[in-house]
Amino acid sequence: MASTRRELVALIEQGAVPPGQLERVVALSGLHPSGQAWGLFVDRLLLWLGTLALVFAVMFLVAYNWSEMPRFLRFGLVQAALVAAIAVYCWAEGRGVVKNTGSRAALTAATLLLGVLLALFGQVYQTGADPWQLFFIWALLMLPWTLVARFDALWILWLGLLNLCVALYFRTWSGAFGPFFISDAAALWGLFVLNTSALVVWELGARRWRWLSAGWATCLLALGSGIPVTLLVLAFLFDERVGFSAVALVYPAWLAALYAVYRYWRADLFMLAGGCLSVIVVLTALIGRYFMRHGDPGGLLVLAMAVLGMGALAVIWLKRLHREMSA
Image (tube, rainbow, N blue to C red):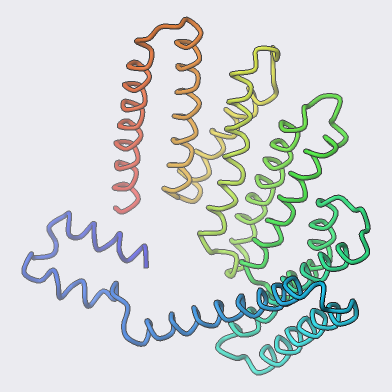
């Protein structure tokens, strides 16, 4: 759909479409969804909202009636819902219900109920485990379902659990790198390595498996890679105790790889715009640090002008790239 829109915009900008025929061309291009498409969208939306509502209903029912419910009833209710979700998945997968959307919704519900069951176990028996262990075991147990489902949203959920696990682990223990990194920096490094590796694997896998080609998933992974490395650069700039940091080498390499991959290998304007935003944030912090250190009140004016200038340059460059991609 995005490709059709870009092609149509390019034809309009080139004057290939007469102004009087513009509405007819837009209608024929299929950009506006039909009544059947709206019906399918509402059907899928209600299916997913209903699935989430059922999962949260089970969780809140147990939580609200915690003191009145005996232990076996709490576990029995959650386990029964989990078994029912798996049964619905097997039934829907066998019949190919609504092109496997029903089976995916059922497996997603089973995955969420698995997390509810683990949380219930930890709360009832007071195992004393750290929070990161809950998310790690949850991710470990749901991995076979994620492999079977071949569903991009379930993979993103799995990666989200790993992100939580890594962040909580490094904030608690600083991991094996404790003598070298403070806990926050170690957590950011862990998230950067995890999400960058996942992004690389996802991009390579998308060339072989079509179900991995959803653009929103790679955008989320790119955010998970870009935000930690940008925060690491900011921490390095403002921490005067640190003379040198590996991020001074990693950040330029990350920017160069981002530009090469999403400019020439797989053109993606969102990724390049994210890189521009990261550079603007880092340069703004660098300029701000210089003026704040010297206590110059005019520094705020310079800072504002620098942000406006860098933002304008980024917009001009991205618009030029957009025209090249649309040509």
